[in-house]
Length: 363
Image (cartoon, rainbow, N blue to C red; front, side, top):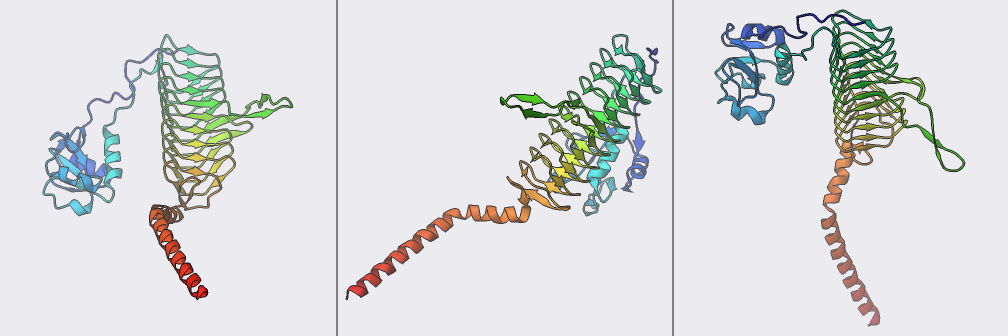
């Protein structure tokens, strides 16, 4: 059943401005400078206007700080002598993220259902849900309060989506999947596609295993553009609370990804693998099926995880090994030319000694 759109726009809170004093309190920084300076946004060091703030998140950007026109800079304590308004904190990157969130404008979409959207029977909408043009929401879905389903998105039958979610244009959530609160699904992502399950028959033909499970996405997860999370063969593929998934990541059937993990672009995780909490898989990492990765493991880019990893390890390589072991191996690889030359010299010395010994035996 369609609801009449309201005139107010979700996310339309007018121009946001804060004084430096207000910002310092909101982001947990110590202010050096006038508290009543008012700012309207954030910007890079070399582009910031006098009514914006910026930050120095890495020493390589320090030379830009002196010339920046920003009203104030977010810095750590090592830069508190810059002689200009500063917001001093332990972690400038974190403080900047919090400041940027204060000025960010969420997608604008009128509360209610657009006339061109398809809404199936048995839908339960929470307060101020917004469904954009040409979106599809199947039957018997439950959509939580203030959730946005943007134009062209597809939500299958019997899907549950929590409160304050954003389903971006052309994202796909297939039948019976479960989405928590404050989840962001970016454009082109597919949740609930069939897992890649086949067995060969007597003639060598591939027989499909029906994929009868679901995908469960817990609260505060973000899923990047063009990523895919396959439904389970049985049971569920599970992405737990707070995990952030970059663009073009593939998560196979029955994978469990722990809380607050980071999966960077082009990561691929094969079926029935389990990741602990706070795991980081850098770009293009591949993970074999049926392995277990412990809490706080970090795997460097382009690595291949072929076996289970205990908690706290830093891994690198194909196959992935502890970084210290990889560095020793790499150091030896770089010295191969030196080793070859040394072996050649030793071979020549051995040959000379053998000739000398042969000569002595002839006497």
